[in-house]
Image 1 (spheres, rainbow, N blue to C red):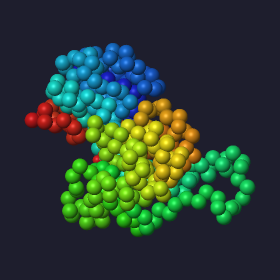
Image 2: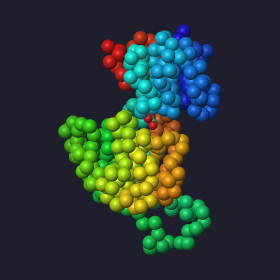
Image 3: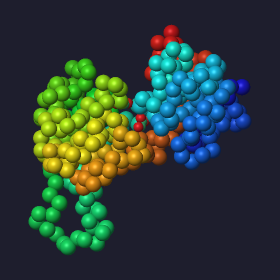
Image 4: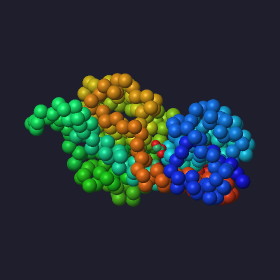
Length: 327
Ligand code: GLV
Ligand code: GLV
């Protein structure tokens, strides 16, 4: 029977699929409640056929070689897979899989919540109320910016970006987007979204929401120059990956009213938060919760398990990010 190593407890639905298929004794879940330590990771993968990992695990060549040549799949419990050295996996002919699709709407829901919270200053106003400092209704108290009728700019028009565009319809928003390549015209029409270059996206967006993967090209795609090119009333939302934004530059922009507000679910150096950012009252900061609904985390566990089941049964995993090696 093949051996499977899971780097941290995930919902039982996925673990049970693996236990039923391969026997409970062959599915080892790392016991710690927290990010696995490097030495435990390198030790835990030794001799296994499948690795089920999470986005806080750095899966590089050293881990793959520690596992050994029988390693047949690296199944990430996430849609983003920047934590895995895919080139090193491809070189070793190991398929890398992710969990796309199931978390699209859940992540867009959260990005939308951040958009609304940042626009209407829910973070800072709730902090004031809880601190017992609310002196009653005020004509100038916590004035935010309107959402309805404004322009939503989407950076990265994949599944989640498109789900944001659909949400914008209910708020009568104009939708513009930027990506490496435009989406199909028919889809643009359906979503009522117009392709623009990055300069126009920066200049015209009232709300700019990031939905691209983290790659060398998108690292620090938003820094000082970009914030300066945005409207002073603009709100930026990041539910993708932290390093896409230069956090220090964002904190500076927020503190100096270069832009109006930010809603962030992801950070450059999680779980550390840039101290300047913590000082920004106009930033809504939440701890990487994009896919964190009970329903979706369960489905992600099923897909991660389904990827492993398919691979170990000699079939094509449903969500492989380097499918060229399976040909
Ligand atoms: C979460 O951040 C994911 O990539 O699934
Ligand atoms: C993620 O699944 C995306 O394509 O946006």
